[in-house]
Image 1 (tube, rainbow, N blue to C red):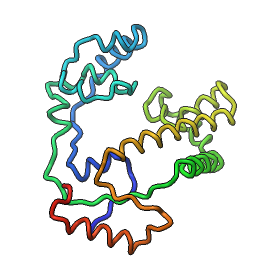
Image 2: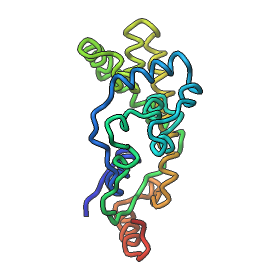
Image 3: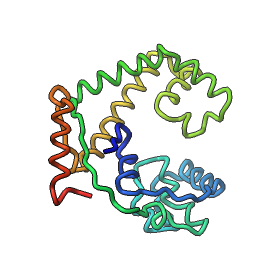
Length: 215
């Protein structure tokens, strides 16, 4: 029996539900046009523009700044709709989900300790090297951690403020992930203090023996 450990809800869905990402080249010109429109005209004006692919627009997160231009659509410009290609599914797999539920305060404490360790173990030097070699506007360099340390290196905030911001944003990410996982009703949740391998193995075996186990 294979085990998939860790990852986000998206990664889990990709494996057990056959989620496919369209192999379509990006359209930088259209994306730049839409991002400029967003910056100058605002979100409401951008959303007032009719999407090139209404089916795709209906399922893209309207509150995600990085996905707003995609909602209007650059994939259909290449003749391939995300709603048709990106959500194609392969045969479903029989599976069971086991989750370890920690109190929110403990999760936040672990996040904070991890941020402290990242900075102590070289995040600043790593960010400095990356910013010297790559465009600071790249999505990877505007992600959690790199964005705040980049601001520190540019003199826009001091290090304690940058670290505090990383922690706050990661706490927010934890909340978002928790919301995602709560939508997955098939997850078997365990208290980490009680979740011995034997307990989890027994619960998973019982789950897989059910004739109506989710697929």
